[in-house]
Length: 437
Ligand code: EPZ
Image (cartoon, rainbow, N blue to C red; front, side, top):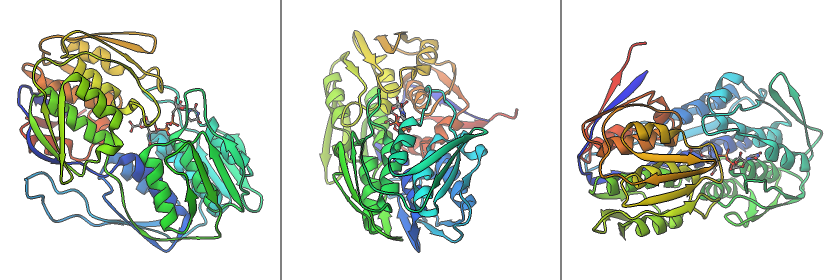
């Protein structure tokens, strides 16, 4: 199991490339199950979650080939991966096994595509994870509205369609707001259903929009994506196409916060600030300066101390839950008390205890974190737990006095492509060590 050794105190300066969005690439790969012919995807990040999805697609009868990208960027960062091709060669299999689904919840995104294209799907019911329960009741509710039936058999969701799915109008919101992957599952299934589907209470995340854009290139007829009401006119078939994955807004936000915490001067390429309006708004309140020119975003501190803020995570376009842990790390250095409410995943606070080990003063009351800023964090040995909590620990390690050791960095490898190569290329001092155990 790998660990990171991070020497704190380096300012991040230079240029870093943002990878393609993990949370767009995963559902888009699933959607390829519904197309005939070859789909070529550009900007698919090399991540363990993507590798798990590729394994799953191969189990489900797809040929998946990735070409390495030979060219190293001029500014010295790591070469990011080249195009990836997906083609369905055997549509006979429709069972997604426990071992892959238990590792990666996003495997649930094959449910809609399998039902729509093969009339049957067996997907292991995803368990909970470090950030809390991960129910799929809304996915099943929406797919039932289209005519699918489900049984729970030995921990597996067994879905079947009698004939062809039929379009329907539905409300898909839940107690915690819209569901991103639930919206995408229903949108994918509706794309091949008979007649019109209207999803009210749809998730508006850019990753939903990117998946809809991919489907429309395949021949789907989707409108309203990116708004709370998506309309899908079912078609008879979808064909392979070519598509570039949108930039990863969560990775971009993580690097922006890293630049602010280290008081650096960092440029980000492949960064779309239109997908981060709520994050930019809050960071500017805190004292981060962002300038955009010719598609490159430059991040510096606005000067003076970092200011505390109060906010609650929201569905898009609100402040994203996936940036909450990274924001908490930044606010550990603010001048005063910040209050952060976590509305989407109320248990998503495993980073708090580890940050306190580094000298932070944070505490939690229910689904709210109270962060009392300190002058400096101290290096310590800490434990990564989930993807974004682990990213928060890397950020803290970059500014802590002395050395920070982060164990179980496989959590980070799920969602950040070549993170230590990218950060070391702009001044960080991160060493990956392999612990025999
Ligand atoms: C996606 O997960 C992302 N993952 C998550 O990012 C992200 O945190 C989440 O959306 C919210 O933005 C991928 O896209 C692969 P949801 P998803 O369904 O779709 C409840 C990361 O760090 N809910 O939008 O699974 C749920 O419990 C990951 O990259 C139900 O109640 O999340 C939560 O409270 C972590 N019933 C809320 O809705 C359901 O059927 C939002 O969940 C589904 C969800």
